[in-house]
Length: 309
Image (cartoon, rainbow, N blue to C red):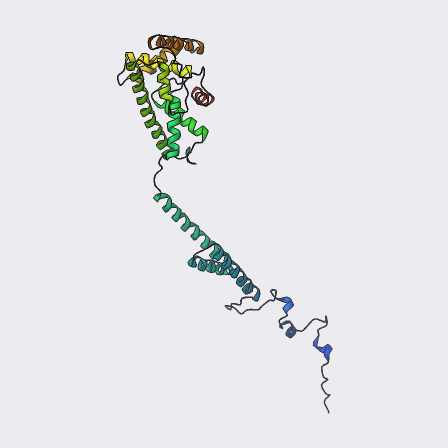
């Protein structure tokens, strides 16, 4: 028996029933499917797709240019490359690198902060302390000259005006303490100068207006009737007690005037007017060369408002 010849395959035999390509055709790389091709892997093998490799190369070149433009050091630029490679392979490794970098940054910051010098009062802040210390001690509204009250008034004014104070002024106890000590030292010095000037004015028999002018010279304060009235009280107390307890005696006399007047502002004003009149009779009236204002000016009034608050 003769066997039938095997028919030759035609083009249609290479297609399945649904006209889809055969498996051999599917294995051929098609540029149109770049980045989406599915690669079969045997267990343990590692295949990097053309898309991820190309993308990483582009990102690394872009990162290098940015690192150079930001003037990163060479070793830092190498770190950028390493970070990008890690980012391409494992999200956990990337997060670990970020965490380690943050910890390193925190350690460096702590070392810088610990090595920073302690806060000191600078020239600009010290100048403002001197200005407002004098204004507070020459205020006719001040009820006590010793203790923390005058210091707190100066602190309140500096805080209110924001005059050359550090940004952490209210948050850092050390800064607040240093500024407070500087104010206390200046208060001590100014009180000493005022006491010496009062004693000298009595010895030289000068008018209260001359005394006021000498104390306000070189300051932002002006000679006013309320200031002169306050200074006459200091001269009156000095004649009675010029010892080291002078300012305690002044505070006691102010308290007595307030209690006698029962806090009535008009009665307090009359009491000071009487003291001023007695002083003028003893030491003379206002010289024609001195301009005396009836009230404090706007700048001194702003200081008086803080004191009276």
